[in-house]
Amino acid sequence: MQYDVTVIGSGPGGYVAAIRCAQLGFKTAIIERYNTLGGTCLNVGCIPSKALLDSSEHFHNAVHKFDQHGIDIKGGVKVNLPQMIKRKSEVVDQTCGGINFLMKKNKIDVFHGHGSFKDKNTISIAKEDGKTEEITTKNTIIATGSKPITPAAFNYDKKRVITSTEALNITKLPKRMVIIGAGVIGLELGSVYARLGTEVEVVEFADSCIASMDKDCGKELRRSLKKLGMKFHLKHKVTEVKGTSRGVTVGVQKRDSEDKFELKADYCLIAIGRRAYTDNLGLENVGIAKDDRGRIEVNGHLETSVPGIYAIGDVIKGAMLAHKAEEEGTLVAEQLAGQKPHIDYNLIPGVVYTWPEVAAVGQTEEQLKEAGIAYKSGKFPYKALGRARASTDIEGFVKVLSHADTDEILGVHMVGARAADMIAEAVALMEFRASAEDAARMSHAHPTFTEAFREACLGATGDRMIHV
Image (cartoon, rainbow, N blue to C red; front, side, top):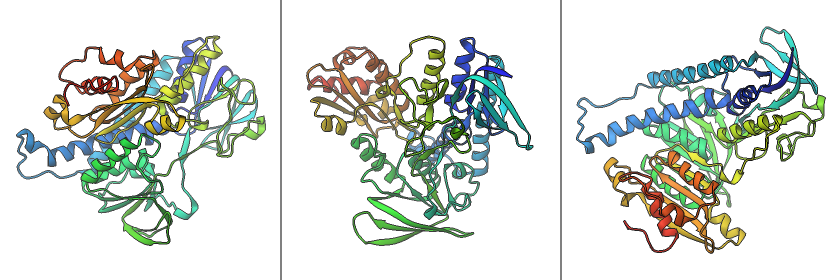
């Protein structure tokens, strides 16, 4: 069967690319190696983790905050982890079912099996029953995503030494958990289990949590997570991980010395990053190049070294974010239709869905200093915000960085309740190159969390913050 566009991979980048191609009139196919559509994000990533984050936050609030609101829970509160996992699975099933509906609605042909290149215009699909099917295509979009990095020394066994995939399906609450990596995935899942009562210890090689984000955000988040009982070993490395049928032993060493110690736990969660997934894709059959980290090399139009074959999302350079992949999928589809889309990668926001949430867009303070760019800063604390006090969410801040001369907003960094939603206002303003003064003069409803952004903008324009 002949297609105008074939998409390999049905995660957010892949299914959005397929839908946009179909909307633009292309005969489109999508290939997914697993039985359900949605990729890592919908099945074992973004969606299920957020379901558990919300459930665990409800439990934590019931135990620690309800009494402040005058809500007495007689008889106590306990965790029903199997039900929590069941609800998470139901959310996943509903979401993936929605993707199936969208494929049918847009008349996209869906093939289940492992897709690989036979040649530039022929895709071979290996099915579970051992049979193989071939389709031909004018253009192909590679959207095969990523897999967790699991070094051999960590002895990943999917039982006691686990990744985020297995951590989403634990049905008996562990007493202790060691997490390797203080990045987004490690801290999100660590906070889930810490809220439920697990003793969580985090080992991180860098000198801060969420090291790629603004340092102030890492400090504030660490301070908050320590209140949950989480312990941190920053500037430490893991030397070995040994798993048994009953638990794990993790060898840890200080980064700059010979000091060593061991941590024992029920589980060790490996969360040190992800790698581009291009296994058995047949790239060698068409001569597509990869870089030293296994990512597919593309040009400014996201086209590989082979004309007509494109790559998006986690398999290419850049942040491994679902919404980044979606933007790239849309860009490729619209280019194929002769349009002139663009992506400003500086304005793709990053979010950590702990509570408080962390969200950021643009340049960090460290990046501006390194680049020698003169800037102004305004920083407003949540504890001075009426809406935050009303909901008892007083942890966090909003920091706005603007150019010292032009006042253009260069970066916005938030830690606090609803930061994941609030960052969109900053993205919109920065898309139109607004100044801190512009944002400060916009009317913000009272009382809301977004008033913190306005106050921080007032601070960046000068000593003008009202409520501090």
